[in-house]
Image 1 (cartoon, helix red, strand yellow):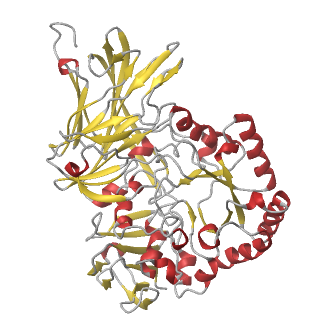
Image 2 (tube, one colour):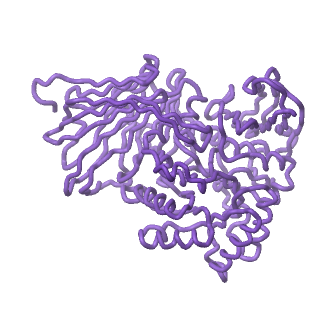
Image 3 (cartoon, helix red, strand yellow):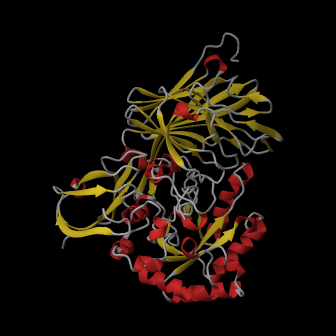
Length: 595
């Protein structure tokens, strides 16, 4: 408890625009924070707590001195827009609890709030638990959530919070409170275990270090990951947040300007045919070149070739002669020991490989959560890009290590596949852009056109995946031959891996429909993914601005899922697109200035 007779203290921090506010308090010794936007409560008093050396710092705290600073910077962003704005007001608050001195940081931006605790180094400190949480300021709000899965490959569902009481959930989790969208998650998970949440009967989302049930000892300073509450007045603001990334340190100057970090689209064989074959690698390179893709990924199975290293080297040499760069799959067990990892990464780099897809990391306890940073650092030293698979959710560390282009951490197209008799629910794809993809890029491996693999989706739905599911390393799931024979080949060749601007289209709602208009240079791409109810849709084109535009329109064919209604016409900002969406259907439009 706070010292006898001590007066409770509060620390208020407002966003730069004055519309978002966080208040940290020590009433009754309980360290709590609350969040408002436009004067409306988003979080009721929520615990900020950590148990160390037998002391629950959140239940015996006193606020002391406060230091304030302003953050204001911009940086290159790879994703749904070209630039991130890191602008916030920050308070660092001195705290004491039963003789332990520590600090809290409160970071308040126009798009949300981050809070965390920091403790100085102490030999043999025992981190035992983390009792932080989020108390949504609404009675049984609608939420979009997934069960806790250390590999982050669970299905997202539409529920009310009360329906999830007692269930262990992963983050991010998105909720709707009145007209506001709220996403909770973590940022900067390094030297600390991953957290899940469980809603209790009172609606508090209680944190749990599930991967470190016994805690850990450390002689180093303890920095709690940021407990993040993203707030948005509409879905466009939600998907354009960079708060998770902003809460991480910037990269070195060399990495920030590195010209070897290059977004791009990749072909990939595992979803289409399984393991790569030793004798058809030139054919896959040729298909990649014909599609105009920058990359080809040689996935799991190459190490079982009769001549694995020689065959890989031959594939790389041929690919380079065709203007294609090679990524390669590796197992995390070969990348855990630091010396072995550095030697292997150097070998790959010396062969001419440009990127590594590293798979099957262990559950993200404090050791493995830190491994992600160690791997990214060592890969950067050899100018290698990275794709983490079976991975911890994004926590924004790609800001510090921009060579980390993407990660899985999502139930993607690998789950929607006939050879394993697996089918994704019809509304899962409509939730992902407003939940998992709010916090960072994801390697969904989209867009499969083989008729038997649609399993309820339409061609337009599948094509839209490649635009909606942001991944600066965009590994395409379908067979290149099916792409080259598809009536949308021109659009498939044009789809970029990153964008300059993203707008969410009216009618979008998690669990129902997801629609984006995304601009790259002068080209606009309109992508719609529909859920489980067929619907008509009118898309207003006012976002185009002045001038005339060539529109290639790929709408659902109402007679069959493996076909489009393709049309081409000239349009302007006063025009609209009228289409009918099938169940699990979609729409894609490609707009270029008319010359």
